[in-house]
Image (cartoon, rainbow, N blue to C red; front, side):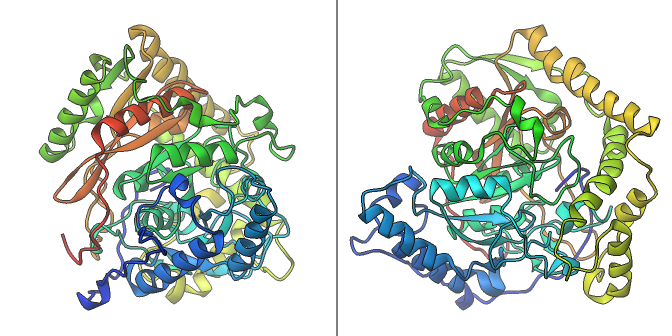
Length: 517
């Protein structure tokens, strides 16, 4: 889900029990591939890991989870090269030889396309890696492939279905295949939950890392705007867009976050960042002792099942020595919904046109107007379920010098920052706040589409402040996440709190690939 919580519909295929038989892929010493951490993977060759993941994807993803939009044809060759480096005594760090997947709106200068899920960009093979991809390659990752997403990061229609794209089809939740993954980083969420890679990268404008992470039982980190570069990522809006890690553990998410950060000359905002080279130094099981945590109760009204999980989570925080200030109120909650959309529409048109102008000449859609025309001409393939209302609204907007845009952006920042997160933290002398990330994810609904059930994301998204979600428990076998959030550049503190909570509760459960539920 990105920017505004969408509604739409699409087909859900009924799967036979036989089709869901899980292959137990093991190595010589009988260590299963499922749920392996980055640390545990150090015992195996990159070739063995990459082959095993490709085998698992072939067995479980095609026609079932459908999380991968494209596999890297060079993955095994990359793994072999990294194994040769290791044998020669060069180990780049903890990610050396580790298979990683990334969302299909992130440029890679290889044989894979970068399409945002759109058929209009199916031949868009980038000339250069996105900055975060270059950073990860330098860290030694094996880029295994690209994940499906809600097309255009869920910024095409007011009635879109999370996890569907014209190029990739529908991604299904590994916990229950008739359930949604949330979005727009749906494919990354599903792939990492299903153990198709060690860790993955998503992007967020509003909720698109944290919501699919929570829905798929993962840790997701939405960084402060400017901590990681935006260059080489198909944009929605530069005032909110960021990439971030999605993983099965806080440790693995922290490792990947460190590899992604760094200043980029193509994205000047990163020069202001306070990046850490190593976020694992914040992994303290006693990290919540004495922490003043505000309980943002206005986000808790989801349902009784979430209440039960959250009550247990708050008890765990108290047991870990946190001082809970309960309740605290975000007084500007929901006061910038309209201005947020206004800013996104303006920035989408401007930012996307800039990106499209850089694509190779063989890609014919080079402006937002071209994309609108392409979708109309290919309606049966691109718009079988929902339209392009947001595209049309964005196309009507003027330049970023318009007074209406400037006024909306100033309102966003005032209400989400100085009068929002900053105000409540100062008033109660808080170190962080907590809220449910969302409820058990909804069923994919042909008629009514997404029915978002509530939770937290927008204040952190609009302000550009960091936000981490950690598995907190489950309801009816469906994951529920707990959000930790605070002011700018507080990633280290949030990692520390998330890790302490994770280690005490061990709330994550592996998916069962149920047909229904």
